[in-house]
Image (cartoon, rainbow, N blue to C red; front, side, top):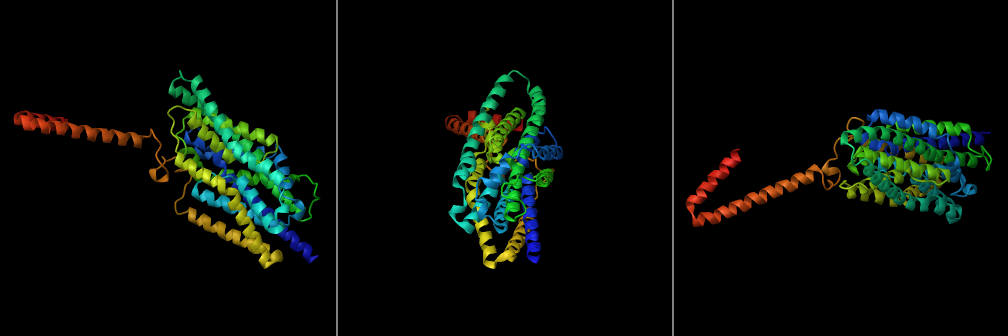
Amino acid sequence: MVAVTESLLLLVVVVATALAFDFTNGFHDTGNAMATTIATRALKPKQAVLLSASLNLVGAFLSLTVAATIAKGIVDANVVTLGVVLAGLAGGILWNLLTWLLGLPSSSSHALIGGVVGAVLAAAGTSGVLWGGLLAKVLLPALIAPVVAIIVGAIGTRLVTHLTRNVKQEDNDRMFRWGQIGSASLVSLAHGTNDAQKSMGIILLALIAGGAVPADSGVPFWVILSCALAMAIGTYLGGWRVIRTLGKGLVELESRQGMAAETSSAAVILLSSHFGYSLSTTHVATGSILGSGVGMKGASVRWSVAGRMFVAWLITVPAAATVGALAYGLGAVIGGEAGSYVVFGVLIALSAAIWVASRRKPVDHNNVNEEWAPGEGDAPAGTDETVATVDTVDTVDTVEAVDAIRAVDAEESPERAAVGVAGHEQGGDR
């Protein structure tokens, strides 16, 4: 009886940790839907995250296809224990928090999958991973989705720009800001449909591992409801650091670019959810924003910021897998359920340390829309900073050239040089 009680307690801890991951997914990925809407001021920051949270809540109830992929399509459920699930969640949560601290829009989906795969590899070796499912449902979509999103975003931006080329800028802004609200709402709905299911799948995996439900069980309603609420609450609190990077640091956005990017994101995410692909909404949203910059003539893209994002994308799965494997190893060394509780305690301590570090330079709804400082990334070509530098250099060169000509004239005619100097001084006074 005591053993059953202890197992039940560990199951509760694992489910709570899965909901904590769902919460971090919500605030980490809020920027996917609302960054461009906030950047173009179509909505105020707090209004944007409230709308996104509401639609994430609704979206979580629309489909369970991705949940089945996570629970049964990537790792062998027969080798999964509660300790494995907890270690995998630790890998996903810590990577989410670290990239949030750095303001990098990394994939919560891939962090979770990487953590679980790493823990399974540490526990059961390569035989515990369903490599075909991992490749087809996760890795290939991870490579293809950003490219598709960039192309769709670029085409959408070109089309919108062409159709509105004769419309006044102020009319464009007014019209597309309303369009942005609609398209951002669609992305939020798609995010809830796609991402909340991943935590549902992990909780179902834990319930199967803990013997609470049979292996062929569907997702219980209480799991759907709790994951939907955790995602919505996390979304409402807003991952302002990531929102700032996507909205201000990547592309100098106009309203029509924002609408094109968000519509492209929603289309790709909803289509992938329909086919059960565990797609990263972060990759899709970022790709669409980049596409909106590429597709608009004269737009500014900060490729140095994009480069840091790409690096984070490449290392997300192996980094989270490493953390998951180490967490499982720590629990295994201590042994039994006590090892899992130690892993849980370490996870809480490291999460608290990251939060404390974030308070040194906080980003919230009050400063999320401030202009991107040069120290945060390279100023894009065509910005005021670049133009001002070019104008200054040109002016200095011109003055130096005029002075050189006057110096030559002075050798030939001191009187004419004196007149020239007087004229220059008068011009300077003006």
